[in-house]
Image (cartoon, helix red, strand yellow):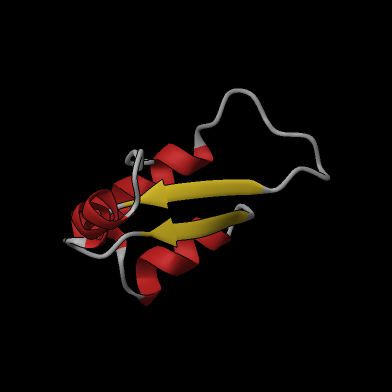
Length: 71
C-alpha cells in the first residue's frame, strides 16, 4: 500500500499543464487512496479529494437513475 501512495505523489507532482491559480482542482479516487497519508498527498498540491468507499458507486447506480461513475 505504501508504494501506491508514493506513486500518487509522483504523479501529482509531474503535471505538465498547471491549472489557473484561482481554479478549484478536484481529484476523484477509489478506496485504495483512503487514509490520512493519501489525503495529505492529495491536498498538498491543492486538490480537493473525493474518495469513494467500496460499494458507494454500486449503491448510487441502483438508487439514482442515470448515475455514472466519476473516476
